[in-house]
Amino acid sequence: MAISDRTGRSTDVAVMLRVNGNARRLRLDSRVTLLDALREHLGLTGTKKGCDQGACGACTVLVDGKRVLSCLTLAAQCEGREVTTIEGLARDGELHPLQEAFIRHDGFQCGYCTPGQIMSAVALLDEGRAGSDEEIREFMSGNLCRCGAYPNIVAAIREVAAEGGSNARV
Amino acid sequence: MLGFEYVRASDVGETVATVSADPAAAYLAGGTTQLDLMLKDGVVDPQRLVDITRLPLRGITRRDDTLQVGALTTMEEFAADPTVAERLPLLREALLAGASPQLRNMATIGGNLLQRTRCRYFRDWTVAACNKRAPGSGCAAVAGPARMHAILGANENCIALHASDLCVALVALDAVVHIRGVDGARSVPLTEFYVLPGDRPDVENVLEHGELITQVDVPLLAIGARSGYLKVRDRASYEFAVSSAAAALLIEDGTVVEARLALGGVGTIPWRAREAEAILNGAPANDQTFRAAAEAALRDPFTIPGTAFKVELAKRTIVRILQTVSGAQS
Image: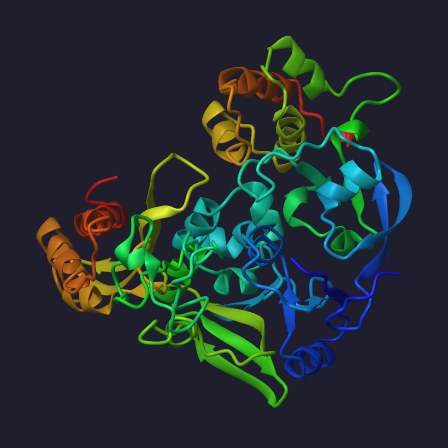
């Protein structure tokens, strides 16, 4: 157990996360973000660290079904919560419809923002905010793509929305 | 940053007592400001962080013509409220203009009121001169390149902007903040909650250390009032305001009966434009009145070369939102 020099109190925290349906117990420094817990402690490197400061959306995951930024969330805050990452979307070797659509529409170039884009899009469909291209663009604005693949990202989301969304898959 | 003790709060009174008794303790709500400043910018450094997100302070209740909003209600939850959509368009538009869906799922209403400035000088600990971070050290922003800064309520000691969209709508609506302290509860109108920088930019509001915002009351607009929020920014979405305005007008027979106007992107605090409201009330709802109101609102700005453009921009923002809300131009 780590003890703070300045306070004499423990700076460790025990956390149980339900990640993609599996209970994961961790003992972490209190400063560890959900992003670092996923990547560094659980080996789930699909979730990306872009700006690490809440400005780019690359670290987007679902907590209890809502999209959030894992870089500005402490792992400790998620005690007992259901965390869904890009690794949790495929079922029985079959990609999620949005993953398929991103491939079909070439919704990425370097791919670094893609997991965040897809997680955000999963939530977008669940929120019922994919009614038009304009609406998709506005409510996907928290996910930046520096390659500029936006038209293809919008096309991929539009197609899945037209097919009835992906709600049943998360 | 150095390590801290993480504590999960379960009782409001107990939590307020704990934080009030420990000068090195701080609250953690949505985290979108607090963790940014702690973990990323390293400009605040509490030794004990009390996570209040599981306290029973979440949800919206309508009591007569007031919405009682729990402080831990998220921005997305607030925006989704049917009464907000029906009766308070300026509030819904301001909420949805802020941040991104991800951040709005995290950020709480109490936390939004207490969000810290985006001033890069404040958020960079290698900058020595910041009266807000290090009282008495000066202001690097006043003398340096600065654009996303305040022109109202500002002075040579501090030009840090209050960047909230939500609070602009809330001051226009005369929202009331409920506060719990060790000596009990009190309530403060949001228009009296913030403190102008003066010669103490480090003092931003009337809260004592350890006091906790528990609820925000939002009175509904009069039936028949029309309202909206206009945000002018450097990109179409997911960006802070360069200038913004929340307006509500009740118009009868072409005359403004009741006007509410508040400005964002220009003030050191969410800015209620009372001088402009005085011009609007009783005047014909036309462009001449709107321009006169805009002139009155921006009569006494404090500018530096980088922010001088905001004076005219803010005036045009006011005219445009008044035109839109009044129906003169959609």
